[in-house]
Length: 132
Ligand SMILES: [Fe+2]
Ligand SMILES: [Fe+2]
Image 1 (cartoon, rainbow, N blue to C red):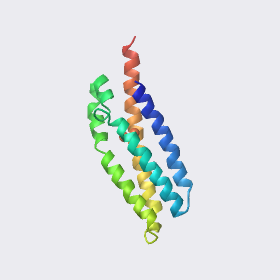
Image 2 (tube, rainbow, N blue to C red):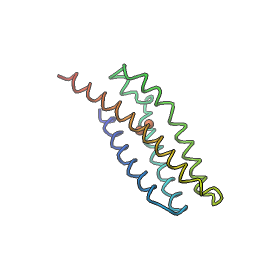
Image 3 (cartoon, rainbow, N blue to C red):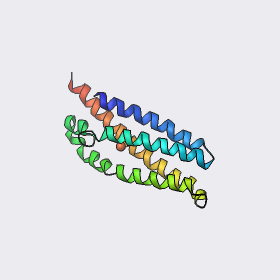
Image 4 (tube, rainbow, N blue to C red):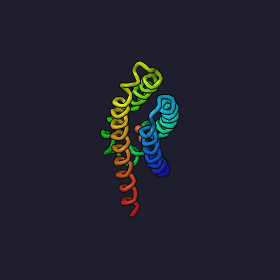
């Protein structure tokens, strides 16, 4: 379950990156940090989608498949929202709406990642229990 542990570590790092964006005030810095977040997310999602979204979880713990499917449909939407936010951050006329948009996006992403972490931990736990 090395991949599962790697994904959970990504979640911790992404969380730190979100906190960094939150601490920034000017448009250019926010834009740059969002672009770097976008790159990190693309790599992270690719890891989760390797061989099928969270395939290693379903293989070991098929009863988690329904919860996995629900989360699996969220990546495209999260990516699209972030692309939109980078555009807002680059547009002085819409910059006033950025904070609200970012907050909604962060809440959405936190909920997604938290749910994944829970599923992976359940799967890891089952794996350990099954090894006895
Ligand atoms: Fe994900
Ligand atoms: Fe994730």
